[in-house]
Image 1: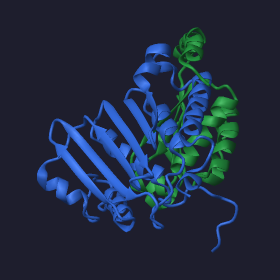
Image 2: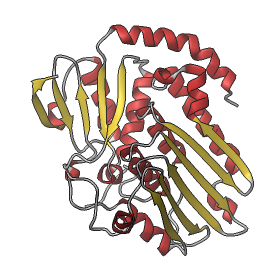
Image 3: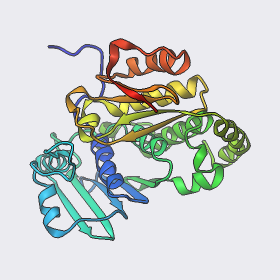
Image 4: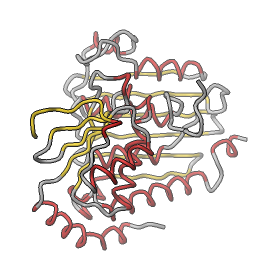
Length: 200
Length: 124
Protein backbone atom coordinates (compact mmCIF):
# COMPACT_ATOMS: atom_id res chain seq x y z
CA UNK A 1 0.00 0.00 0.00
CA UNK A 2 1.25 3.48 -0.82
CA UNK A 3 0.61 6.25 1.70
CA UNK A 4 -0.62 9.33 -0.11
CA UNK A 5 -0.50 12.95 0.95
CA UNK A 6 -0.17 12.29 4.63
CA UNK A 7 3.17 13.06 6.17
CA UNK A 8 2.34 12.18 9.72
CA UNK A 9 5.80 11.52 11.06
CA UNK A 10 4.76 7.92 10.54
CA UNK A 11 7.42 5.84 12.38
CA UNK A 12 10.36 7.41 14.18
CA UNK A 13 11.80 9.28 11.21
CA UNK A 14 12.82 12.41 13.11
CA UNK A 15 15.19 12.85 16.02
CA UNK A 16 12.59 15.21 17.49
CA UNK A 17 10.24 12.21 17.84
CA UNK A 18 12.95 10.35 19.73
CA UNK A 19 13.29 13.40 21.98
CA UNK A 20 9.54 13.21 22.65
CA UNK A 21 9.95 9.53 23.46
CA UNK A 22 12.85 10.22 25.87
CA UNK A 23 10.74 12.87 27.61
CA UNK A 24 7.99 10.26 28.03
CA UNK A 25 10.49 8.07 29.93
CA UNK A 26 11.31 11.01 32.20
CA UNK A 27 7.61 11.68 32.81
CA UNK A 28 7.03 8.03 33.71
CA UNK A 29 9.97 8.28 36.11
CA UNK A 30 8.04 11.03 37.94
CA UNK A 31 10.38 13.89 36.98
CA UNK A 32 9.62 17.44 38.11
CA UNK A 33 12.31 19.01 35.96
CA UNK A 34 13.26 17.80 32.49
CA UNK A 35 16.10 19.42 30.58
CA UNK A 36 16.36 18.88 26.84
CA UNK A 37 19.57 20.01 25.22
CA UNK A 38 20.43 19.91 21.52
CA UNK A 39 23.99 20.79 20.52
CA UNK A 40 24.85 21.11 16.86
CA UNK A 41 28.44 21.79 15.92
CA UNK A 42 29.22 21.52 12.22
CA UNK A 43 32.96 22.18 12.73
CA UNK A 44 33.26 19.19 15.03
CA UNK A 45 30.63 17.43 12.89
CA UNK A 46 28.59 16.56 15.98
CA UNK A 47 24.93 16.60 16.90
CA UNK A 48 24.22 15.72 20.50
CA UNK A 49 20.86 15.25 22.18
CA UNK A 50 20.75 15.20 25.97
CA UNK A 51 17.67 14.61 28.12
CA UNK A 52 18.27 15.02 31.83
CA UNK A 53 15.63 14.46 34.51
CA UNK A 54 15.23 14.36 38.27
CA UNK A 55 12.98 11.31 38.18
CA UNK A 56 13.28 8.07 40.14
CA UNK A 57 16.38 6.85 38.28
CA UNK A 58 17.38 3.25 37.63
CA UNK A 59 19.32 0.51 39.34
CA UNK A 60 22.38 -0.81 37.54
CA UNK A 61 20.71 -4.00 36.30
CA UNK A 62 17.70 -2.15 34.85
CA UNK A 63 20.07 0.29 33.13
CA UNK A 64 21.55 -2.57 31.17
CA UNK A 65 18.15 -4.02 30.41
CA UNK A 66 16.50 -0.86 29.03
CA UNK A 67 18.91 -0.83 26.12
CA UNK A 68 17.84 -4.35 25.26
CA UNK A 69 14.87 -4.31 22.86
CA UNK A 70 13.15 -7.08 24.83
CA UNK A 71 12.77 -5.25 28.14
CA UNK A 72 10.37 -2.65 29.45
CA UNK A 73 9.23 -1.23 32.77
CA UNK A 74 5.70 -1.16 31.43
CA UNK A 75 3.27 -3.89 32.31
CA UNK A 76 0.74 -3.23 29.55
CA UNK A 77 3.08 -4.52 26.89
CA UNK A 78 6.12 -6.74 27.18
CA UNK A 79 8.47 -5.12 24.67
CA UNK A 80 9.96 -1.63 25.10
CA UNK A 81 11.59 -0.21 22.01
CA UNK A 82 12.25 3.49 22.56
CA UNK A 83 15.85 3.48 23.83
CA UNK A 84 17.09 0.55 21.70
CA UNK A 85 15.71 2.32 18.59
CA UNK A 86 17.54 5.54 19.43
CA UNK A 87 20.73 3.61 20.22
CA UNK A 88 20.55 1.97 16.80
CA UNK A 89 19.88 5.33 15.11
CA UNK A 90 22.95 6.85 16.81
CA UNK A 91 25.26 3.94 16.04
CA UNK A 92 24.12 3.88 12.43
CA UNK A 93 25.15 7.55 12.14
CA UNK A 94 28.67 7.33 13.55
CA UNK A 95 27.57 8.06 17.11
CA UNK A 96 26.60 6.38 20.35
CA UNK A 97 24.10 6.42 23.15
CA UNK A 98 25.09 6.76 26.78
CA UNK A 99 22.88 6.29 29.78
CA UNK A 100 23.69 7.61 33.21
CA UNK A 101 21.27 7.00 36.04
CA UNK A 102 21.16 6.95 39.80
CA UNK A 103 18.22 5.69 41.85
CA UNK A 104 16.57 8.61 43.61
CA UNK A 105 18.59 11.20 41.68
CA UNK A 106 17.54 10.94 38.06
CA UNK A 107 18.62 9.90 34.61
CA UNK A 108 20.69 11.43 31.81
CA UNK A 109 20.44 10.04 28.30
CA UNK A 110 22.85 11.35 25.70
CA UNK A 111 22.69 10.44 22.04
CA UNK A 112 25.53 11.64 19.83
CA UNK A 113 25.56 11.60 16.03
CA UNK A 114 27.96 12.52 13.26
CA UNK A 115 26.19 15.66 12.02
CA UNK A 116 26.94 15.15 8.32
CA UNK A 117 26.46 11.36 8.33
CA UNK A 118 24.24 10.26 5.46
CA UNK A 119 22.28 7.97 7.79
CA UNK A 120 21.68 10.63 10.43
CA UNK A 121 17.96 11.24 10.75
CA UNK A 122 16.91 14.87 10.35
CA UNK A 123 16.31 16.66 13.63
CA UNK A 124 12.74 17.41 12.53
CA UNK A 125 10.08 19.43 14.30
CA UNK A 126 11.63 20.29 17.68
CA UNK A 127 9.14 23.14 18.17
CA UNK A 128 6.26 20.67 17.77
CA UNK A 129 7.83 18.23 20.24
CA UNK A 130 8.40 20.92 22.86
CA UNK A 131 4.92 22.44 22.43
CA UNK A 132 3.35 18.99 22.80
CA UNK A 133 5.21 18.34 26.05
CA UNK A 134 4.47 21.76 27.57
CA UNK A 135 0.75 21.81 26.79
CA UNK A 136 0.00 18.26 27.90
CA UNK A 137 2.15 18.35 31.07
CA UNK A 138 1.69 21.81 32.60
CA UNK A 139 2.85 20.69 36.05
CA UNK A 140 6.26 19.51 34.88
CA UNK A 141 9.05 22.04 34.42
CA UNK A 142 10.84 21.90 31.10
CA UNK A 143 14.05 23.55 29.97
CA UNK A 144 14.84 23.41 26.25
CA UNK A 145 18.30 24.57 25.29
CA UNK A 146 19.43 24.46 21.68
CA UNK A 147 22.79 25.48 20.26
CA UNK A 148 23.70 25.66 16.57
CA UNK A 149 27.31 26.60 15.82
CA UNK A 150 27.56 28.95 18.77
CA UNK A 151 24.07 30.45 18.49
CA UNK A 152 22.08 29.57 21.57
CA UNK A 153 18.38 29.71 22.32
CA UNK A 154 16.61 28.64 25.47
CA UNK A 155 13.11 28.22 26.82
CA UNK A 156 12.35 27.61 30.48
CA UNK A 157 8.72 26.93 31.38
CA UNK A 158 9.36 28.10 34.95
CA UNK A 159 9.87 31.62 33.60
CA UNK A 160 6.66 31.35 31.55
CA UNK A 161 4.68 30.04 34.51
CA UNK A 162 5.98 32.93 36.62
CA UNK A 163 4.41 35.29 34.08
CA UNK A 164 1.00 33.70 33.47
CA UNK A 165 0.64 30.85 35.95
CA UNK A 166 0.62 27.08 35.44
CA UNK A 167 -3.13 26.88 34.72
CA UNK A 168 -2.80 29.27 31.80
CA UNK A 169 -0.47 27.09 29.71
CA UNK A 170 -3.34 25.43 27.83
CA UNK A 171 -5.24 28.63 27.05
CA UNK A 172 -5.54 29.60 23.37
CA UNK A 173 -3.76 32.96 23.76
CA UNK A 174 -0.84 31.36 25.62
CA UNK A 175 -0.60 28.43 23.16
CA UNK A 176 -0.46 31.00 20.38
CA UNK A 177 2.32 32.90 22.11
CA UNK A 178 4.29 29.69 22.76
CA UNK A 179 3.96 28.56 19.16
CA UNK A 180 5.26 31.86 17.79
CA UNK A 181 7.99 32.02 20.40
CA UNK A 182 9.24 28.53 19.52
CA UNK A 183 9.09 29.23 15.79
CA UNK A 184 11.09 32.40 16.21
CA UNK A 185 13.62 30.49 18.28
CA UNK A 186 14.10 27.97 15.46
CA UNK A 187 14.42 30.81 12.93
CA UNK A 188 17.06 32.47 15.06
CA UNK A 189 19.04 29.24 15.46
CA UNK A 190 19.13 28.45 11.76
CA UNK A 191 19.33 32.05 10.60
CA UNK A 192 16.62 31.41 8.02
CA UNK A 193 18.54 28.51 6.46
CA UNK A 194 17.72 24.85 6.92
CA UNK A 195 20.05 22.49 8.75
CA UNK A 196 21.01 20.90 5.45
CA UNK A 197 22.03 24.25 3.97
CA UNK A 198 24.15 24.95 7.04
CA UNK A 199 25.93 21.63 6.78
CA UNK A 200 26.16 22.10 3.01
CA UNK B 1 10.26 38.90 18.26
CA UNK B 2 7.81 37.49 20.80
CA UNK B 3 8.80 38.67 24.21
CA UNK B 4 8.00 37.91 27.80
CA UNK B 5 6.43 41.38 27.97
CA UNK B 6 3.85 40.24 25.49
CA UNK B 7 3.20 37.19 27.64
CA UNK B 8 2.82 39.37 30.73
CA UNK B 9 0.05 41.28 28.96
CA UNK B 10 -1.87 38.01 28.61
CA UNK B 11 -1.83 37.45 32.34
CA UNK B 12 -5.08 39.24 33.15
CA UNK B 13 -6.96 37.65 30.27
CA UNK B 14 -5.58 34.27 31.34
CA UNK B 15 -6.73 34.66 34.93
CA UNK B 16 -10.23 35.54 33.72
CA UNK B 17 -10.38 32.48 31.46
CA UNK B 18 -9.18 30.26 34.31
CA UNK B 19 -11.90 31.61 36.62
CA UNK B 20 -14.50 30.78 33.97
CA UNK B 21 -13.00 27.33 33.45
CA UNK B 22 -13.22 26.57 37.15
CA UNK B 23 -16.95 27.22 37.10
CA UNK B 24 -17.62 24.57 34.46
CA UNK B 25 -16.92 20.84 34.52
CA UNK B 26 -14.29 20.69 31.84
CA UNK B 27 -13.83 18.16 29.08
CA UNK B 28 -10.58 16.24 28.98
CA UNK B 29 -8.88 15.01 25.81
CA UNK B 30 -6.14 12.42 26.36
CA UNK B 31 -3.62 11.45 23.67
CA UNK B 32 -1.58 8.21 23.91
CA UNK B 33 2.12 9.15 23.87
CA UNK B 34 3.91 5.83 24.32
CA UNK B 35 6.60 4.89 21.80
CA UNK B 36 3.85 3.11 19.84
CA UNK B 37 1.68 6.25 19.76
CA UNK B 38 4.58 8.55 18.83
CA UNK B 39 5.68 6.22 16.02
CA UNK B 40 2.12 6.20 14.68
CA UNK B 41 1.85 10.01 14.60
CA UNK B 42 0.53 10.99 18.06
CA UNK B 43 2.52 14.25 18.10
CA UNK B 44 0.85 15.47 14.91
CA UNK B 45 -2.56 14.49 16.32
CA UNK B 46 -1.79 16.34 19.55
CA UNK B 47 -0.61 19.44 17.64
CA UNK B 48 -3.76 19.39 15.48
CA UNK B 49 -5.95 19.17 18.60
CA UNK B 50 -4.11 22.04 20.28
CA UNK B 51 -4.33 24.17 17.13
CA UNK B 52 -8.03 23.49 16.66
CA UNK B 53 -8.87 24.39 20.27
CA UNK B 54 -6.75 27.52 19.87
CA UNK B 55 -8.48 28.48 16.58
CA UNK B 56 -11.95 27.95 18.03
CA UNK B 57 -10.89 29.77 21.20
CA UNK B 58 -12.06 26.90 23.42
CA UNK B 59 -10.88 27.56 26.97
CA UNK B 60 -12.70 24.90 29.02
CA UNK B 61 -11.04 21.82 27.53
CA UNK B 62 -7.81 20.33 28.86
CA UNK B 63 -5.52 18.35 26.55
CA UNK B 64 -3.31 15.88 28.30
CA UNK B 65 -1.37 12.71 27.56
CA UNK B 66 -0.91 9.16 28.71
CA UNK B 67 1.48 6.28 28.02
CA UNK B 68 0.93 3.04 26.15
CA UNK B 69 -2.55 1.61 26.73
CA UNK B 70 -1.77 -1.81 25.25
CA UNK B 71 -3.69 -1.08 22.05
CA UNK B 72 -0.56 -0.22 20.08
CA UNK B 73 -1.88 -1.41 16.73
CA UNK B 74 -4.76 1.09 16.97
CA UNK B 75 -2.59 4.12 17.78
CA UNK B 76 -2.76 7.06 17.69
CA UNK B 77 -5.44 6.84 20.37
CA UNK B 78 -7.46 9.80 21.60
CA UNK B 79 -9.82 9.60 24.59
CA UNK B 80 -12.55 12.12 25.21
CA UNK B 81 -13.86 12.38 28.75
CA UNK B 82 -16.89 14.59 29.19
CA UNK B 83 -18.59 14.89 32.57
CA UNK B 84 -21.75 12.79 32.73
CA UNK B 85 -20.93 10.84 29.57
CA UNK B 86 -19.20 7.51 28.91
CA UNK B 87 -15.51 7.78 28.02
CA UNK B 88 -15.00 7.55 24.26
CA UNK B 89 -11.78 6.19 22.75
CA UNK B 90 -10.98 7.00 19.14
CA UNK B 91 -8.38 4.94 17.27
CA UNK B 92 -6.25 5.26 14.13
CA UNK B 93 -6.41 9.03 14.51
CA UNK B 94 -4.89 11.51 12.07
CA UNK B 95 -4.61 15.31 12.32
CA UNK B 96 -7.60 15.61 9.96
CA UNK B 97 -9.76 13.22 12.01
CA UNK B 98 -8.69 15.02 15.20
CA UNK B 99 -9.82 18.38 13.81
CA UNK B 100 -13.16 16.90 12.75
CA UNK B 101 -13.53 15.34 16.17
CA UNK B 102 -13.12 18.74 17.87
CA UNK B 103 -15.88 20.28 15.73
CA UNK B 104 -18.23 17.33 15.99
CA UNK B 105 -17.67 15.91 19.48
CA UNK B 106 -16.23 18.76 21.54
CA UNK B 107 -18.21 21.65 20.04
CA UNK B 108 -21.45 19.94 18.95
CA UNK B 109 -21.54 16.95 21.28
CA UNK B 110 -21.77 14.45 18.41
CA UNK B 111 -19.52 11.39 18.80
CA UNK B 112 -18.03 10.28 15.46
CA UNK B 113 -19.03 6.61 15.66
CA UNK B 114 -16.92 5.60 12.70
CA UNK B 115 -13.66 6.40 14.54
CA UNK B 116 -14.63 4.96 17.93
CA UNK B 117 -12.79 1.83 19.04
CA UNK B 118 -14.00 1.69 22.65
CA UNK B 119 -16.85 3.10 24.66
CA UNK B 120 -16.70 2.84 28.41
CA UNK B 121 -20.16 2.13 29.76
CA UNK B 122 -19.67 3.62 33.19
CA UNK B 123 -20.41 7.32 33.24
CA UNK B 124 -17.44 9.44 34.35
